[in-house]
Image: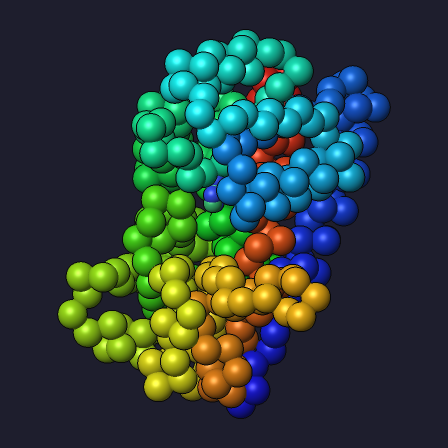
Length: 295
Ligand code: GUN
């Protein structure tokens, strides 16, 4: 079997088209323009690329955007003051503070300071708690993107054995929670593997859907999966540069070997990545509608 390639680029394009129309209609019918503020502390090159892409996509869809580039030496108090101003600004419906933050800033203090109604990343404990009980307003962007990719690719999630590699707060834990809910596009049996798991292969070989956010290239090889598995690769590893100086990206899965056994697989790049940004746009539109009392 050679796998169908699940294109995040194409699915993201479809969702963005839907959002563009919705944003135009919100402007026309309600004079409402969703607003997103992105905050980047320091100059990490990967974070600069991500924030740049978020800003660019906002503009393309008709979302009002403000970007704050703050020096790495900023104090926690200064950053909290910026968040406080954004919390109070009625033009801004969503606030995104790019992670990771410099070591001298306590990440949880910053995430807790964002108004939960403007927390379009879904990282505030109020929103994490709401996700646990199936009441979330904002699903975290990467996990939500994964769920949408599966649904829109016609993959059956209900009753599936889903195995997740990685237990981060950004991907592993929230995707486990999302797919566990007794809801449409969920209702799976979920196993989360991590660095303390004794026999990873025992679990991965049972997976109907394998979601990999392990953080290293070739964490999943062909011998670790069963024939007909659906593989979602969340990894982004820079393994070198092309002669032209562009980063060479690979995921966490040995793509060439695993695609020969899988039913469907996401590529890197062009898989989960474009979906993450698109779900941020979706959450920003939702935040604007909530703020305006439309939902
Ligand atoms: N860093 C890596 N992924 C993310 C994300 O989804 N949101 C934010 N804010 N920072 C990140």
